[in-house]
Figure (cartoon, rainbow, N blue to C red):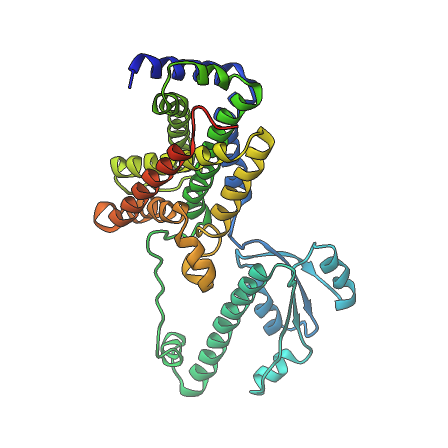
Length: 384
C-alpha cells in the first residue's frame, strides 16, 4: 500500500466532510444533540405521581393514613377531592394518575378490630408506571398496617412502641442496591445512550460518504486512478472512524460531567472496547454502502439495521435476560449487546479485563468479520 495515496484520499474525504454542511452536522452536531435529547427525555424513574385523596371518613386516623401518601416523594399531592365523580375528569385529562379512596367508618372499623378496605384507583395507560405505583401503594400500606398492629400490641401487652414494633416484625428485610445506590435511571441510561449513538452515526457517515460518490459520479475518478481497493477503503473510512472516536470521548464527557454517571472502570480498557465497537459499526456502514446506490436508500437501510436493533434488542429498555427466546437469540447476534455490557460494567461496576474479556473478543471478531465482508463485497471497478 502507498501511504501517500492513502493520505491523499483521507485529506480529500476530510475536506468534503468539512465543506458539506449536512455531513458536518451529521458528524459533529447530531451525536451530541442525540445525547442531550435522550439523556434528558428518556427517564425510567417513577416519581411525583399526581394523586388526590377522597377521604369519606375524615377522622384523625384516616387523615394520618392519607398523610403517609401525601408526604411520600413518590407522589405529588394535588388536593382532596369531595367525590369520585369530580375526580374522574382529572384522570381523563391526565392531571391525576392515582386516587386514594378512604371509606366511611375507616377509624371505627380499625378501632373495633375489623378490616377497613381502602381503594386505590391507578391510571393504567402506562403499565410500567402503573405497576410501580401499585408497589409504592402496597409498601406504604404495609408500613401503616405494621404501625397500627404495633400500637394495639403495645396497648394490650403493656409494651413500649419500639418493643411492639420488634414483636410484629420478626423478619426484617434490608435491601441494599449495589453499583447504583440511589437507583438513578440516568446512571444506567447515559452509558446505554452512548452505545445507541455510536451504533447509529458511524454507519450513517460511512454509508453516505461512499454512496454519495456513486450518486455524484466522482467515484469514477477513483476507478480510473491507480489507488487500490485497500488504499481507497482505508483512506475513505479512517476519517469517519476518527470522528466517531472523538464523538465517543465527547459522549463520555456528557455522561460523566453533565448527567453525573459514575465511571469506575479502566480508561484504557474502555477506550479499546469503544474503538473496536466503532470499527464494527463502521464496517456495517461499509456493507450497506456496497448494497445500495442512492443516499436515500443508504439512510433507510442504515436506520432499519441500526436504530431498532440497538434500542429494542441490546438491553437499553428491557434486560436481555428478560426477553423471550427468539429475542435473546437476536440480541446475541448484535455487537451492540456486548458493548452494552462493557459500558455498564465500566461505568457502574468498575470491572475490566477479568470479567469482560469475552465481550472484547467478540467485538474484535465482529470488527474483523464485518470489515472482511465489506472488503470482499466492495469492488473498485464493479461489473455493469
